[in-house]
Image (cartoon, rainbow, N blue to C red):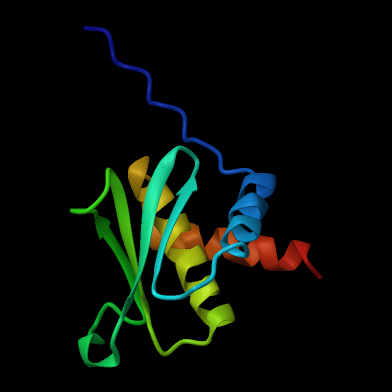
Length: 119
């Protein structure tokens, strides 16, 4: 019996991560934004503090409103912090889309590399 070769792990280049950050910089952060990254549509939504739970200040889920992903960010975050939270959630969603192990850790690693490259 022939064994299937494992799928290659997709690479998210540093320039692609930079494009994500720059693209998020064009948003108004007024509570409802539509955004596209790497061929996927994202609906970025605020949520109130009384809905804060174990998922923290942000999370993502398959969207029921668009053909894509809903990304939620705590509405009381300052715009720059909200941008960082959404940045993380989109990176994590990207990793999950490709079934990478530990998508949260992948997102943290990509963020770390991105911020180090900015120094």
